[in-house]
Length: 356
Image 1 (cartoon, rainbow, N blue to C red):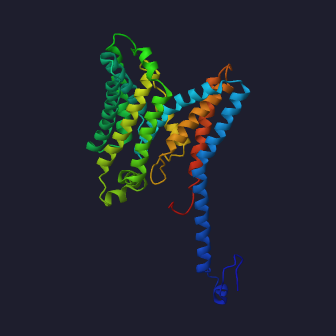
Image 2 (image 1 turned 90 degrees about the vertical axis):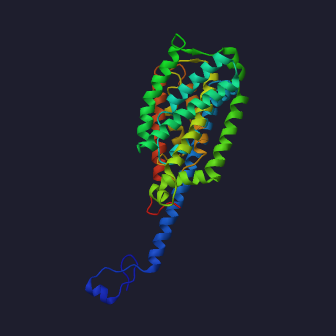
Image 3 (image 1 turned 135 degrees about the vertical axis):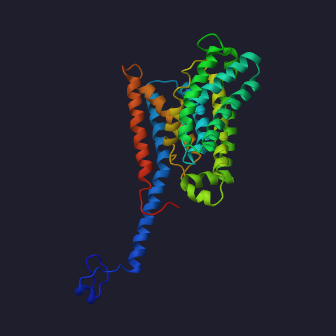
């Protein structure tokens, strides 16, 4: 005898009115269906950033062609806009993979760029300028990590405090010049502000980060900490040392990005690089990075997201050129797309089966 769902029911159960127990075959079928749904959701979440990138690339080409834009110059601008965000976001992934959150990246970039500018003005040496930028950024990152480790505070709290501190430091650095800005010789900046220099810096740093994140214990431990910090602690992982290492790598990325920022914008004020922090966060989400961290963290999210952000900005600039309120419309479009990407990324994992 069978019930309406096709489950086998004995005569005694039917008479007594007791609920039927699902057979092993029915349970296995339900598990297989749930697993298949989970795989489809994961595949969709993984492919969504790439699909979005392809759509934005097509929109960029169509908008630029129809508007008669010089596409060669537009592509160069695209690289200039995306490379700094990609570098800093790639380093920041080491922090976000642990489930932590750093909102002081923009302020740290500004301070490191100002230090680089001051060192160049004092020495005129490119390598000292680069070293000073990296040292300043790594120092700021390590201060945040150390404060969190020593006082056992959430990383988010320490980065909020560092945001205010770094803002004050930037104001103090500007005042050392006796004016409201730090200027770097434009001929020097123009000499090294080239696509070749940017690509070399980006490729070298990205190769280092891919190796550390995907092929070393550090990357595996960080994803474990983001996915299950209790398990990570019980397996003997040093949470504090891992956090310090992650912040050091992120600081290296900030230092390199600040160096390129100083070359790109040789006149630095306290408002320079003010939007980098938010651009980094949006770029990582666009690229498919899970803000909660864990095993779903992907190092390539920074690359996909950085290029997607630049494509979106360029496309919106072309389409809204000369339109009143164009900047506000572009901001709203970015906000809507940001929310859509977050929803799509989250919906891909709303299953009853744990991700494998």
